[in-house]
Length: 313
Image (tube, rainbow, N blue to C red; front, side, top):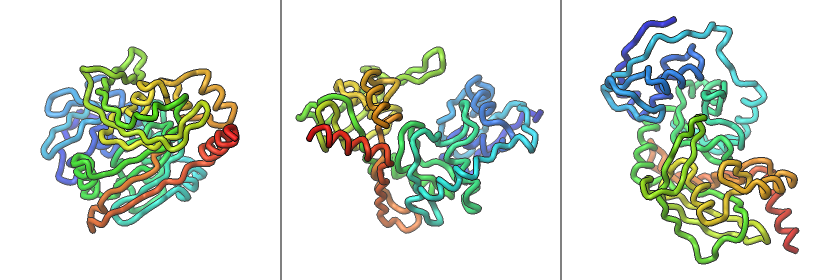
């Protein structure tokens, strides 16, 4: 059992999320325990309670309570097969960052019942990426392009680009039903709630945060629409809730979707959320050159599109 510690945020740690900061300093502590002590309010930032997603600033004082350390044999190493799989899904890499085509079903990091995720895979995969951090997030069931920074300077640069709306994010999704042809701009505020069970739910609400998405119809099938979506803001479940608000939820969405539609597409081979982060455009942190990334669709997605096209013939 460790003792109470007070950790001061250094210049190299500015901009880190609280959970990532703790996971770095508590490497021998089970990840589920790290998230539990944050949730219970045992971790304090400048004497106040904090959320896992809180960004730290220079000089913040983080109180870390006594926690049980894992034995060395309990440290989880992601399976070698998964490391090999991720190696083949790297879309771009340089000294500052990596961009990976994340599969659906893979968490971005360990915690909340998941022993390892994409971050842990990359840290085990690359000697120069032992301190790699997420630049942004994708839901576990969403596939596609995600950026990971190898250096804190790169992380800060990319976060600043996101804050300045200088990172372009586009998604491909399959929606249930007939998309209203004249509808492109969806400007609806979203409010995030946490149920008693701990599940996160998001709803359209005037009390929510401003959210703006643009939906572009690519192909309209009999009972489904292939869409490209451009995000202006990046809220939790934004595409999923904005789509549902138009009566066309994302296919495979067990939280906001239609059960019968999901069941049908599962039988057809789409047994996951039909949402894919297709395109990223940003400035390389060191050179400021424009980087454009296209993440290919996975096989289940392309096969469903082909079947929908055949059904319309």
